[in-house]
Length: 265
Image (cartoon, rainbow, N blue to C red; front, top):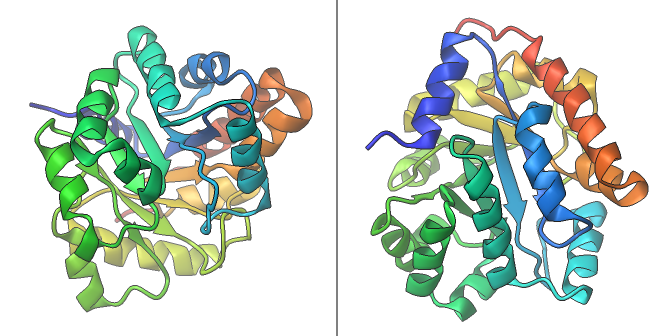
């Protein structure tokens, strides 16, 4: 069966451009309305954050968004309901859940995979679950055709990339900084070279995130990647200006990415 990831990245390659991936935190503001608007605003893939009390990989903007969501009563089950509502209206846009192992383990690996598949989710990024420890989740997801999407970083060497590649699906998320989300990004030339290495080692599309905040940065990174992720800037716009402000930012960012032709690779 052809996955939404396969179809989306094949379309992007045919158009010789990178995709735009928009991250939003479940339960921070009117998430259902924001999710519904993202494909029309230019998002090729969507990441839906699962709020957690100890989000160690996230910068201040996403940490605070998670705390607001939790205080508002958001949890993993309700986040899956948001995913289901999104999928009922949008059949083709890949939807990824991004979160931490503790809430998923508490939910139950098998139950989570079953409910995620029923909600129309395509893959899971579990930030703090390394490949050596993700077999219970990976096996549960595989039973429903869902992908475990793994991370690579500037410190991931060739040998480690082999481990990252084994069992990965959908795409590889290249963390462009050794810090937390929203903390800034390395030189575009360095990122482009790293993306090429990860792509060759894994055979999967490589998306770049953790530090892309501006249209200029997104466009530059788009030249050497398969897709560009923006999270903290969208979360901040949503909090400061509401749903429409976040949508307007996504439109600008996605247009910048769409206008940046990829380097030959």
